[in-house]
Image 1 (cartoon, rainbow, N blue to C red):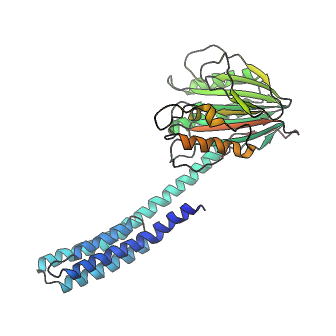
Image 2 (image 1 turned 30 degrees about the horizontal axis):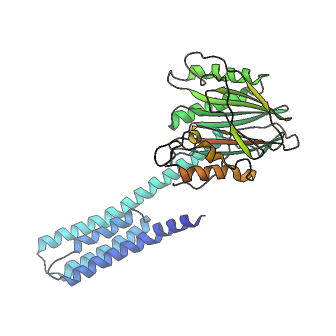
Image 3 (image 1 turned 90 degrees about the vertical axis):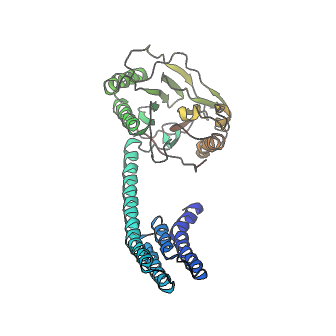
Length: 370
């Protein structure tokens, strides 16, 4: 467990409990120093402070102490009977209510933990792990959701090994939230189920487009980049309105330009069919596929970040550290991450013929909170 999490847990479990006791002691000391007034009712502050962060048992302890201290302060101060009765009722009410609040809070936290576990299962179902190699390729991925409460969003990536080539998909669903996750799961299922059925990448992409249309509203769509990379380095790209990948060669990089992309997947109206873009990779070349979370990130002044600066070093860095480096530079320069982000890095030149795989997604994490 990271050190900051240990400190946070210590503060929650020990610090707030001790703070409630200190508050109670301070109220008692103030009351004893001013005998003409009674602060007994103020003892109710300590139990409610404990109920916000402490366990039910610790809240009970603080409530008991507050009740004892409050009754003692009432007894030693010369106040009228009505005022003392009101203070006593307040203390009794607090001693009962504060532990109840703590118990309800703990029940809610347990439900949230259960939902988080369910979300992780859903994440594994939607984005199954990508293997480290496929044929002559090395693979690495990273994913970050724009919503802190969510583990996944509307961005997607998938990898399927078909014979002596690897077919890839990187996409971005319009919108965010559960509807975007549902659409992303649908696109991934279409791609995984159809990757072996169509002889060409263009036919596969067109099939995904046709199959998706009936399930989307007129305003929904998915930008997508389809790729097929052969074991001997031939690359074919078919773009449906998605940003092209970055190619690194001999530790230099350039953003590819695809001259004839189609409109996004699932549009209610027809667009021109995309023309495949083909080229060859040399051993050691890398392709970085990404979504708008990287391409449209903004700095603290609201200006778009320079994509070249973000991907600097992707070709020279150790393969396992390339994507963490991109994310570190992004978080350092960006004001905040307002969009989901998916990265897929491919390196050509790994010898061997891995068994065919069907997978879509694994995570490389970089501490956030920037």
